Image (cartoon, rainbow, N blue to C red):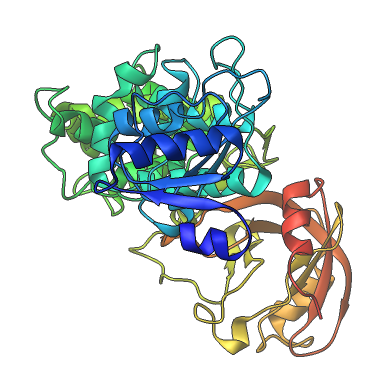
Length: 468
């Protein structure tokens, strides 16, 4: 490095374990006098060296020791009359994929109630008085991405739990663990259980769950729920505060939605027996589900509108899995073929068409015949393309075009991508639409006018794709 700097006209020299004491002292003197600009060294000047005028520190190799990291950084933190700030250039994090910034940064500002992401995004408001950290924009983005990617190694997660009390002043629970460390909840629940991790690091004595194998995906599926109605109903069920014999029709449907969300398959005997088994034999899973309910309720950012048919327990703008929607309309894995590649389903007894739309389609996931041209045109109109086999004169095409009475419903369920973190994404329920226009014959390209405004997030996602 010293040769490279000298070659481009930046005076520099290198010191190593073989350098004599006189050489080290001369190097310090020359740096203080401005005769050289840089000293490159390995472990020689970590401590016991006082050069207040140092205003730039370059990190060129990783260290797993927080003590060494702070000592190295400290070489540039001494006050000097001619120095306003310390510039830190870290060439390690960019070069080493597994470099973990979390604990390095946490060591700088100590224990707080806030999360590492908030500290970074808000320019570290909890630094000691008179101290400031300003991250360059690209560095900030890189560190945030690094923190997220480095979290998801199980040993890291265990270490984060063990060290939680050393880093934060609030209670260790699911909400604080996810928020304080800035953990993506969807990614976390694509493979982990908070309570199981607590047991693995011996914070909890045991993991009380007899059906771990059958419930391996329960937490992931449940965490996707963002309907306040379904969350509140689930809380009452799990707390055993509902009489299952007096449930309304809509509540019985929500009981089915909850069952399939947790168990994934039809009950051996009944929904009630499956719920009793869950509560009696899987206590830690139930406790974690209750924590998830409270976390999700606090993080919901949309205002839901109950669907007009009160017997259908769906809320407009809430998200639902395909299986949850199928349960509501009496179609489950046992009586309907999954997956539903064509993305449409006609519920004859309700005279209702269901459209399942993925805006940004991946050619690996869809056949050429199902790469439909579907997108929000604005807050009122949605462009939708029928199956290639649906013609204007077909019964289905005629129903779409001519059946415009209030008795006929066309319900839109929309998502941006098919998968995220290798898991199926839920659909946002947009409610009923009405015929506006159409063109083409096979397939038919429709424009539907929505009863309720299309959320801005759907419009933005539609604008990101190329529309022919």
